[in-house]
Image (tube, rainbow, N blue to C red):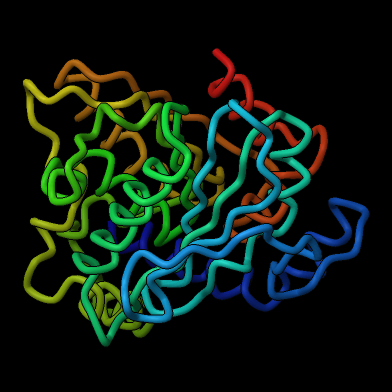
Length: 284
C-alpha cells in the first residue's frame, strides 16, 4: 500500500505539471489550462450564505436528465467554473449541466463540503423538479459525490435519500477509504497531510466505502480510475465490492490512456471513451 500511495501521488504531481500540455496534445484542441470552460452559465443559484455555497446551471435542455458536477482539488482548491468540455458534452447528450462549488478545507472538513453538495442537489431538484439527477465527481469531488450517494445522513438532512439520485459517476477518486495505511516517505507525508486536513480524526466516518450498509437503497455507481494509479484501482474496486455486497449496483471501468488530469479534462470531448461510457450509463 505505501508503494501504491507513492506512485499515486507522483502521478498527481506529474499530471499537475504536464497535464495541460498532455491533454492538449491528446485531445487536439485548445482550452484554458485551469480547466475552465469558455461556455457561460445561464444561471447561478445560491443554496447558502457563503459565496462557495452556489452552483451554475448551463443551457437547460428541457425535461432530460440533470448532470451535477463536483470539482476536485484535494478538498482545499478548485471552483465550479472548472467544467472543461462538459457544457458541450451535456448539449450533445441532451443533459442539463450544473456545476457546484462547496466550502473548502481548512476552513471546513470534508463533512461540511459533502453537506454543501447535498444541499446543492436538494436546491437543484427543487428548482428543476421531476427530472433524474446524476452526480459526477472528479478526484476529491469523486469522494464527495460517493459520500453523498452512500451515507444517508447528508441527503437526509435536506429531506432526500440516496435513491433519489439517478446515479453516481466517479472519476479517479482515491479517498473512498481514508483509513488505508500510509507510508513514511516525503510523498506519503504530503498525501497524509492532505487527507488529515480534510478528514481530521473522522477518517472512518468520512470514508464512503466504510459507510455502505445493507438495507439502504443506493443509486447505481459507475466508477472510473486511470490504469497507472494503483491506489485508485484498489479503492475503486473496494467501493464497488462494498456496494454490491450490500445489494447495490456498481461497475468499475479502467481508463488505460488517461492521467488523473486528462480523464477529467477529456471527459466531455466527442468520442472520449469514458464520457461515452457514462452517456450510455445515463441513457440506459
